[in-house]
Length: 241
Image 1 (tube, rainbow, N blue to C red):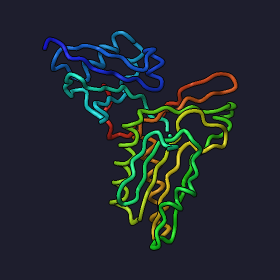
Image 2 (image 1 turned 90 degrees about the vertical axis):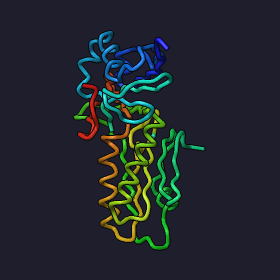
Image 3 (image 1 turned 90 degrees about the horizontal axis):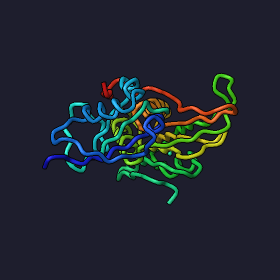
């Protein structure tokens, strides 16, 4: 085999930089993920400028630039996350935990009621909602997109870790996709527990980790323009350079 074919996906502001949602390229056998990124960075200099904050995924897993590529691989270039039946992607865990993306309105209280068990004495429902301004600049609405299968997998990994380390019963994470109006919920982290402190602590840990690890991007539409909202990856995630 003289070349291998790779599917490449682009998200958020990176999609705007390259002007594509996805691409199909042929590269030399044994080429690395970083080599592929460098090829695109040579074509799109702004991508090179973003390399310190860009994360690479290989077959829906965070990967190092040194990872080798094989024929048929799926690669994604992920800008900093900003942190979505009614669910476009979801994972229901036998223990009762739930992780999903949706284009419908989120009802965190209804989610909590579905998680509650007789042993529970509390539930905490954190919902992030769309405000009407950013630093005084009037906001019309938000629009969310994500790397859907990887986003749900990552939420499930976060939830499983939290369930192991906090004295809780169940946890759910649900994120909206698409257009979100002012005061609508964009993300919910719901935790049930026999005692309130564990539920509060686990919900806070859940939203903090979701915002830095789950590949979801937000574009904010103002009365006088629009912009992709730049956040930051968790320090544990390896960048493109």
